[in-house]
Image (cartoon, rainbow, N blue to C red; front, side):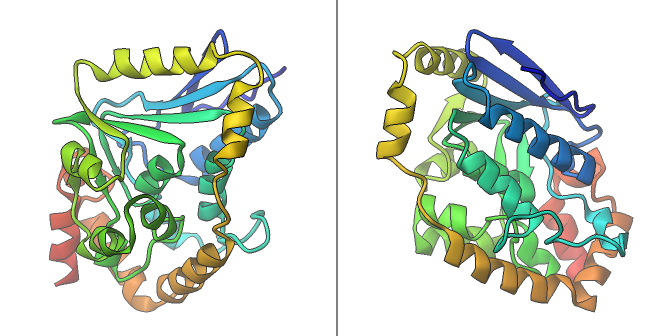
Length: 275
């Protein structure tokens, strides 16, 4: 099967395991090019019977996916529902494409993932975080908006309502151990062990007898989040279109968001802009 070539994605294959490395310097922001490339790749994998496990990792040791590209606020032609399935926006559509993939999906989180990056992590079947390096955060509330790519629904399903409220409204960066304790990721692992662990898990799953993965995923379905996604989109769209959010995004970019220095302490940067 011909597979798409995407400049911001490094794709390798070995005996049923597909490894997708996200490579969009300087901080792996989820821009339109990367999002479109991921959607094209996921559509290709959905029809690929030779792929059994898909592992997502980052080519950048510090950032998995920083967040959705803030410069989209300047794109007057950007339509968040264009090309998305009915009832979803484009950001939700990406998460759902990951969540409903027939293959087993695994995220190896060895860097920071906020906003759309955190949503991507939580959309996968399993996610594993490197102690001392990984960080997860839904920071949208600091810009006066609501998560709009599944960031209210995925944490709710994984952690329960009380912790999901802390994740979304607290808008703090969770380290690997804290994310594990609340169920946001499967496990927190020593940074020098995560590669071997994920490689072994992916290989063990890929080597299962034919039909086993499909049978297990059929028995453990991803669930229907359509009503929750619609509520999330309505809440997000109402806030994102307002002048306050636009002002905060522009202020964040001016203060260093989407640069390595700014992204290392993004929550502090956003709080300083919002004051």
